[in-house]
Amino acid sequence: MTVIIDYGVGNLFSLKSSLNHIGFEAEISGDADIIKKAERIILPGVGAFRDAADKLSSLRLDDVLRESKNSGKPILGICLGMQLLFDKSLEYGEYPGLGFIHGEIRHIGESIAPGLKIPHIGWNSLLFPRSKPKSELYRYISEGDMVYFVHSYHACGCEDSISAYTEYSTLLTASCECGNVFGTQFHPEKSGEVGLEILRAFCGISA
Amino acid sequence: MITKRIIPCLDVKDGRVVKGTNFLSLRDVSSPVELASFYSRAGADELVFYDITASAQGRRIFTDILRDTAERVFIPLTVGGGISSLDDFDRVLKCGADKVSVNSGAINDPGLIRRAAERYGNQCVVLSVDIKRVNGRFTVFAKGGRVNTELDALDWIRRCTSEGAGEVVVNSIDTDGVKNGFDLEMLDAVCSVTDVPVIASGGAGSIGDFVTLFKSLPKVDAGLAASVFHFGEIDIKELKKAMAHENIPARL
Image 1: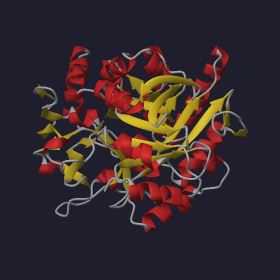
Image 2: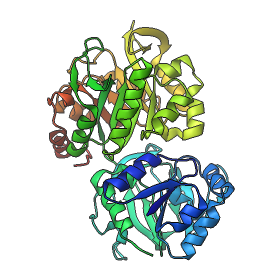
Image 3: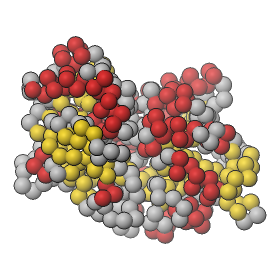
Image 4: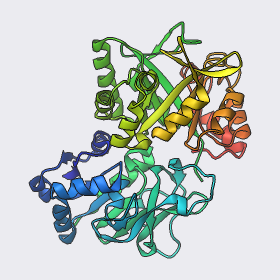
């Protein structure tokens, strides 16, 4: 069973439906006991970093996530959920994240060419780093396949853990991973067949 | 590279998809869920569901349909029509919508955009504007294009995007249903007053109209249409191929 963490943010309905659609059971829950029993965990999220981080800790779900990470359970953060996995974010201040992946979240305006629209909204292609083997998440898809992004911030200073980039005048972090912890800046549950294949691959990873 | 998006719009009334010419005559087309999955398979980049029912019962049917669609279609879904409060945002977001489009609701309650953006994020709030030239001035119309608000469209768009609207759908009443091309003059004017993504709507009659749109206005991010897709006058796969052939970034 995959548990989608409910802490009051994001389109959880689509995420659950996408997992069910490819034949995996999923439960939406904010209950620590249920999350502890999960085989794998998805941390979704949209909105502002600080609010989301506050909600996670006020529900004590940060501790549950830490425990799950240490037990080797696969964890997938999506969009803001991915950003929460990092050391810190510089969105409207400086706020600590879970620290599962080293690096920080910065505004894309610092990196991209002037005149480009922010947020980076729409379909863009995945580019795999040359120096690494292909991520397990991408076992069923190919480089160049397109996924759906909606974001104004991205992960920086995390080259060692990047599993895919996307090009928006410069290379932005599309996904990253560190051991059993995975993150996608894009929304696999909104990325058509390609996204479903990425979720299928994640559900095939075991502790 | 980010691609230009092609967005079919489904106007839904009493559980069925309808589309009129110049908003007046409505014609029944198909089942929304079936049509949505058909478009997703054909390569649509997003879908817009527009609820044009007024009754409470119609509202319930609409949210049921939305839920059925979100269970089967895994591309971004925007919902509009009758959105006038945060409760309305909540109602459709819980049923699988990713973005919510506000039109008359924002005109009646100008604080709605800011409140929604604060709660759900700018990326969730889409401003939809029906615009018509009145004495040479781009003017905002409300209630599905029936009521002249006398608001200047460019001022209105500037204001709403500064309040937190994350995208703007520009629907030209002057070209809607005419099928003779998008309103390039109006779109160009809108692009010059905002930095958020602009979605062109109203006037698409052929594949060439989309090509012309993206070629002449590189700042336009997406093209939206309804009947030309519903009646099979434009095949989305063919459209994407034609865009790629013209070096317009497209998701094939």
